[in-house]
Image (cartoon, rainbow, N blue to C red; front, side):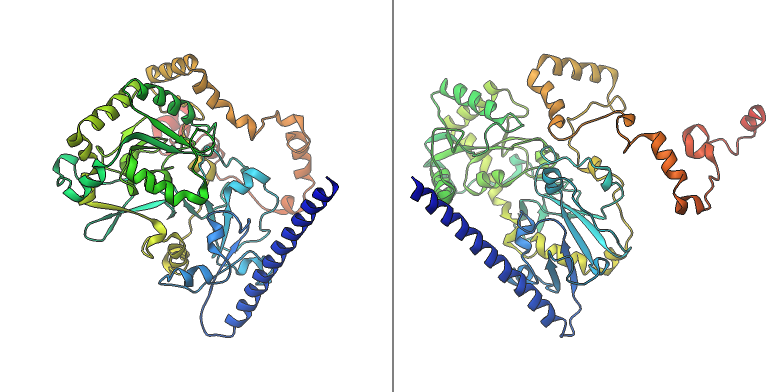
Length: 480
């Protein structure tokens, strides 16, 4: 037993040493490349990754220029580093990238002490906003650009791209103009042959059980309902009874292609535009996607080529699946899009590769010269469903939502998940926030006290909507 423990300890220490050695080699290579490149006449753009370089998508940025050269990007003069001291001055970096989930997981441990107007601070995340909301006041008026899966990001990092048959990238985007399925050309015999070989209703490959979206419950209910039609839903991974190790994923995808009519593209949480590779798994492997998530799916696919567990009841969903399996012509309709569109991983082309696009953007002088800033990145990134707003809902809509939530406990619980990440306190509960303490501190701040500041119109600052009457003679006369 002792020998076994010693062996395990030896293995762990060896792994740590090897990892440190490889990391140091990478660091020295980066420094060497930097000093070699400074001897050339090339004008470089410097990217500092403030958070860890080991997390996706930043892991693929690598160090130095490697990522851009290996991807054959049109522009390769971007130099990536996690070394804050490389240029001896933090303000000399063209952009600084911050991986948002790390701030939620580890807290905001440090931020740049100085910044210059020419620098762009980039907010990046491939993780759902529902999983990793950003609600820290330190990030108010902090970020200049966004680089996320959200389609209104400054730099979009979608999980896949949509192409038309002319070879042009057309999506995904917020406004898509799809052909109607009824206007699409029929499925050819080659595709029919693939589709006719399928024998099992549906598959789901999943490893993350108990996701906040509640997808496990939906899948289990669908599995039971399909059985009433004599059909089967196979659940692979730790949440089901079937096995599909990640090391054999290619084989699993081949099985999906050959055996299954439908595939559950269920997301782990509900966020705007959060559509992951789960959808591409279905589309790439001739299975009809059954979607469940917070996105507007018409931004990603034409209506009529998928089924939605968001809008159909379990009974309706199972019946539609059963009807399509029994009626081949009905099933073929879901695949007519193949005649008009194709889906690809974004990194499959330099035209859509998010890392190439990042380097291109940094080299765009016009965009870099613009002064842009996100006043509240949290509100931009924050998912719907964490609050109700009487500003946007009618009284009837608000009352109905409240009633629905009270009836459905799982729905109600969603509004309290923030307790795992944040807390609220009365400001006088801590000297750090006590307004009376802050007042005394401010009066003792000689630098602030020496500044000459005055409010030109305190009324407009305090209540602008109530004070829009400066030029109204009638109001001025009677309020004088």
